[in-house]
Image 1 (spheres, rainbow, N blue to C red):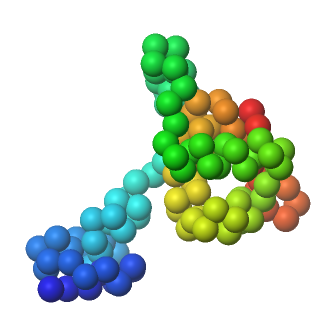
Image 2 (cartoon, rainbow, N blue to C red):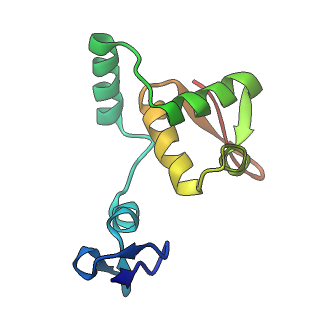
Length: 118
């Protein structure tokens, strides 16, 4: 057995991946190499096309984030992650999907970034 350098999860030795001098579990590796862009015209087109065919289907986490923003109208990104008890990475992943669906958007503030309704 071996331990992930990032999250300290115990994994089989062959499941760890080398990245940037660290030995990472699959989840941490994917989080490091995945580059999700919130402003991606092709992703927006794909999301809107899927919505048109299948209707709105959100994961439980996406529903939680959307409900928080609907209730508060605008929430700082760090505060949103804290209130939902998520890491910044988790928040960014869920926000990115909802941004592509044009349900939420980010706004720059003098003290950081916030999330608001689209």
